Length: 183
Image (cartoon, rainbow, N blue to C red; front, side, top):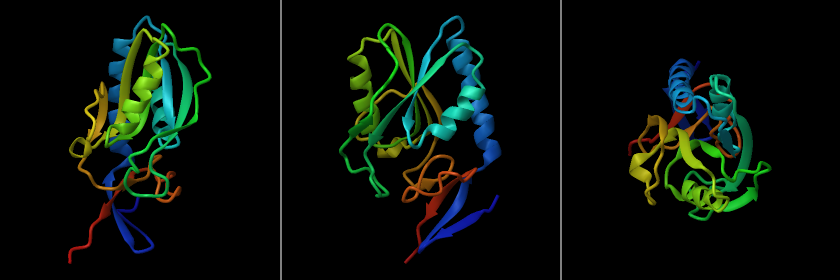
């Protein structure tokens, strides 16, 4: 795995290795397995970014479960959230009275999770929890509860492992952060 990558004028350095991510996902799954023993939660992945994290998480889940997906838009091609969240794909599953675990790749402003929570709570689920691989505590604008956090990171722009750079680089095995050039 390369320690540095360059895309156009932007330079990225390895922030979280494939091994570190895998180890943390196993720990998260272990806690979820314990918390949901005897239950059948529905994992709801938020597309597109969460698909790799969700696949690896689900492969480590030992309790019976179901999966579904929502697709939102809040970034477009920008490096920061537009502040406006739009639903692009709704759920297929019936979630009323069910245990829901929303799977996010990253929580930064809190806008998307707040939008998702309001949307899902309209269906009156039994429980609602959130697992996020990355959490940018410093970037939070709307306070939201994240029940399972992979890594708390600074407000750097990150790519790889499902997170994109102009809709590309999701397939990187590690997570890379933008290196800000000193002036």
